[in-house]
Image 1 (cartoon, helix red, strand yellow):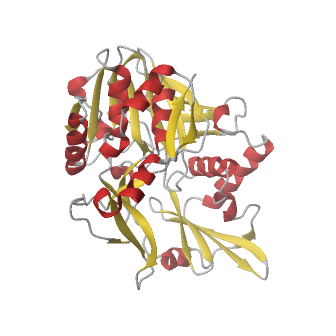
Image 2 (tube, one colour; image 1 turned 90 degrees about the vertical axis):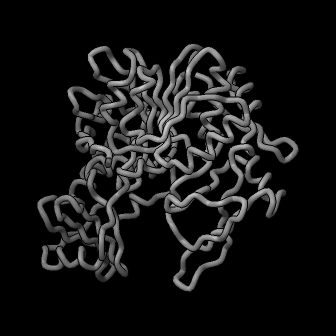
Image 3 (tube, one colour; image 1 turned 120 degrees about the horizontal axis):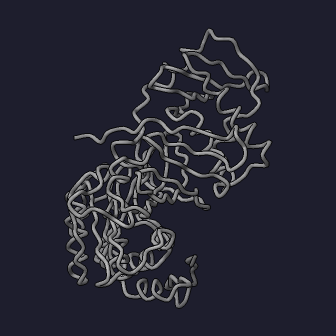
Length: 397
């Protein structure tokens, strides 16, 4: 399978893939046409300590704008679902990024890993800026059909304008991608530019037998892993997790719920018995490829849990059951108190123990299967590293 790599020539990031067809596609699509502006960290903070984001456009600072677009980096293009007016942009204070121009290496990698071939009918979930859509159109040319859906109408409008200006005419629609897109089904490939907690049934139903689904799995602990599923004629699907440390923004309806006041959650376990921990919360925060996947496995063990902090205390909480695990240090020894129907930290430690005993295998040693609605991820040989994903959540209306 071809893989993308990068070289810098004359301060321009050139994306090079082993497949000459993809190389021509990358050379043909001008990223700058799809990013009229982006937000950059100004290095300043508000009185509340929030990041002040400054807009960067060609009109404001052409050199900075072009340099960023030519680099292999992700550029934030939207906060909190508010589409900027890039002709008259203003700074932002804080906010949650809700759209971006993903770094080109990841965009190309996703399409390459999806194994697109001439004649394929393709559904892209999450049009975003339209740059990724343009690459697929260029790669397939007139020998395939590209459909792309985007939940944000303003975002799709800008993407459509850029795509049509460049001569690309994919089928575009404002739609919730978790439903797929029935009018253009069935598809040979479904590729998601967002992450999901579970694979929607609609994607399976809209795939041709032998079709493939490439998506990123995520959750409320912000653990990520990619999977490439092959859909069978009976509607089941199976496939490997793919290597690498890739993350995408969550599908909006599947974003983690607001947890509330961390101190309130910590109080739930105030009177519970304490025990020494075998693994501290730093195991979930290690900024390494290995640590990244360990966090994903912990997330599989406690799929409805999320981390919140209060002063010097770390809380692992589950808003669906009212369970809480409170980790704190006392005279140099770290301990945990747990309350509620689930022993969250026990489950995390059991998974980390099993993973350690198996010599910390990476994602390429795991597979995913979907059968009769049940979604499971399992190690190829270690039976104690097997997990059932939470029940699929229906998209909001």
